[in-house]
Amino acid sequence: MRFTLRLHGQFQLLSPAGENIVIASRKHQALIAMLALSNGKPISRSKLAGLLWAERTEEHARNSLRQAFFTIRHAVDGHGVSPFVFDSASGWARRDAVATDIHTLVESAGAGRLPSALDAFDGEFLEGLVFHDETLEAWLVIERSRHHNLLVDCLAGLADKLERAGDVEQACLAARCLLRRDPYHEPSHRTILRFHQTRGERARALKHYESLKALLDANLGVAPDQETQQLIDRIREPRPLPPEVANGKPRIAILPIRSLSHGGDDKLTAETLTRKLIGELGLFSPLSVIAAATMLALDARHETVEDIGQRVGADYVLETAVQGQGETGWALAQLISVQSGTQIWSRKYTGENLESAAGQDRLVRKISGNLYHILMRHAAASSAMEPEGGIGTEKLYLQVFHHVERPTLKGMIRARRLCERLLAIDPNHVLVRESLAWINFHSCFNGWLDDPDRGFREAHEIVLAGLALDDHEPYLLSAFGLAEIYLGNARAGLDALKRAVDLNPNDAEFHTWLGIGLTFSGAIGEAHLAFDQADQVSPDYHPIFLFRADAHYTSGNYEDAITCLDRFLTVLPEYNWGRLLRGACYQALDSNAMARRDVAHVGENALLLNGRYLDQLLQARTASFRQGLWQKLEAAGFPG
Image 1 (cartoon, helix red, strand yellow):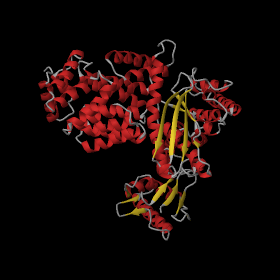
Image 2 (tube, rainbow, N blue to C red):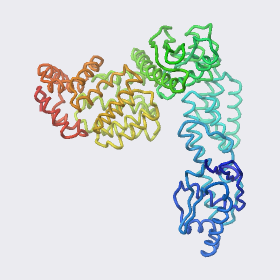
Image 3 (cartoon, rainbow, N blue to C red):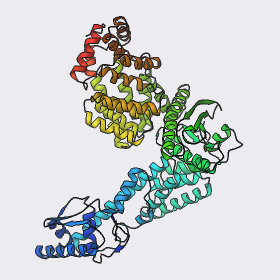
């Protein structure tokens, strides 16, 4: 149990038992705040005395500090081990012994959940404290400004994260709390407008907008910004935009999961699964997921999928049914295209105990991981059929996605041109920057660039620019991690790749890239664990086979590597790096004719690929790896 310290609003110190500990002196309250905010680091007595009693002589200030230490010790005495420690040189707060409201907010924001008592953040930092001493008052002004900005950043990030996860109600609570501290924060007003929109409360949304408009005009002399005006224009429409009008991200509606059993607990489990699945799919930033509140309020028992899609403005609808108990239970998921009304994917999941939270979590991770890649490929393939002129930016992005998923030389040239066009329209489109990095990666490994080192460095610069816009976008982080790995910066690369996995553990892509990063670092066992995770999340994700093959090759398991490469090259038969790696494996097994066939195929299609190019391409690999690969490929006829 820890002491609790409230610094927003009126100062309050509570014992582990919840008893109020009275600290009457304003300067003693400020001293406790200074210690608590130092994150466990000692603050020298001279610094504390100089801040708190700057108007007094040094000796008088030290005596006052000594008296303050004594008073604080006496106040907490009898409530447990004191969280505040003082020695002859300094004072500090033990982080494991005291929890501040500020630390709680930061931790909650990082975890994507609301703190338990949002009302505690209504007041300003150390509200009501006033000091006539100039030095201490300056400290208070600075800290109030800093904590105001910290509060706004945490609540804004939390509202955004919750809304992306489909929990628009919790996002709205965070936004309302922020607006009590900063009533002009327009992104929070937009969160509230979208909350009313998802609940069908059009009149309340319009009323909120008019209040915002009047507030900005009266106090700042400005109108709401363009994004807010565009949002209210959409809300004024008499019905949701149909899918064909929405040029945005592929939009999916998760129907409330149906329990085919008859117990009350089964229905509760089905609702819990629905909420979890919507939340997990919300982690995939290229998708737009209809909020849980909207879908759970939907009574669509007598409507077709097309009708449901029209009502909520979705491109795709997921139907899921569950039945049975314990390990004998099963779930059936089906993805339907609203436009055609046809099923484009289905899968039955067995062996998960849906009565346990862990079993539910495993099931929703499997469904969301499978679903994302199927849905994106379908949406991208559909967009690839449309002419470039006259379609919106997100449809253009889907065309880029299509080419990056199926890389060819012509496709990479077209995708790069589309990316440049997209960035000219929207310089803040971070997923386009991730795609540009992958265009460079594919071009490097296929011999479509004349200098792979420059290609990796360009990719690195591209994703750095994207991270400056959004350093929590996992697709950017994974591309940044790979660029670092390919340039030989293993530690930085692995850190970024692990962050991407932490942000969205449901995408096989991130586990796969972590696996290749670990392979480059020589951690083959850990790499296979990462590939296993990717395979569990999305068994049909073809890049797993290429990169697992690399790990097999590195550890000398050439037959296993060939098995993986055969599966990969079935999907992408013209991927030159895959053919070269398979050729080296065949050569290691003395299958010389097979090795020469693969190497000759690459030679006919990629004139730039030679020994010198390969040395630059694999600069981050060990010298023994490069030498061994080169010897095998040279024996199979690869040019020097």
